[in-house]
Structure formats: C-alpha cells, structure tokens
Image 1 (cartoon, rainbow, N blue to C red):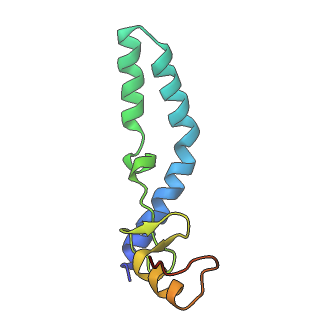
Image 2: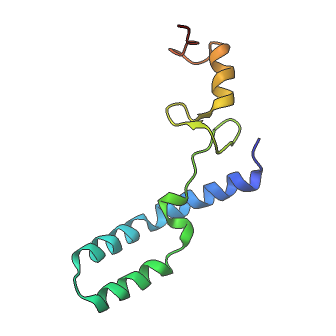
Length: 100
C-alpha cells in the first residue's frame, strides 16, 4: 500500500493539471507560431512561472486498489500484483491464465 501522502500528492497534481491546461496549451501554441526571438523569451518566462506540477508528464498512473505507481496496467488501472490475484480468482472478465 502506498503512503497516503503520495496518493494525495497525485490528487493535487491532477487538480493543477486541469487548472492550468488551457493556459499551458495557449502558451505552447503561441511559442510555435512566433519567430521573434524576444517574444519567444517572454513566452518562455511565462511558461516557467506556471507550477511545475501542472505539467502532464509529472502525473503517475497509480493502482486504484493499492496505490502502487509501478507496474500498472492502463487497461485495468491495476498493478501487476493485484491483476494476477484478481485474474486467478476469476474477478476480471475475459482474462485467463495463459498456457501454451
């Protein structure tokens, strides 16, 4: 089980991502359109003033049962440990143990 502080930090990051999404995308589009060097520097300074945790690359996928951040399957939202346990107990429809 992940620490509650780590899970709450992820929740805080999600809120910041949603809050600054439009502002960040408009600044990025303006940066791509401009050719003037001084204007590019001004736009980059505005981008740097945005909080770091508002970037989408800072968001981590977490297992919704345990909060584990590594080894998470996106299709199920579960970590590999929980996925294995649930598939052995036949709790996931359509998932079977492979044999060949």
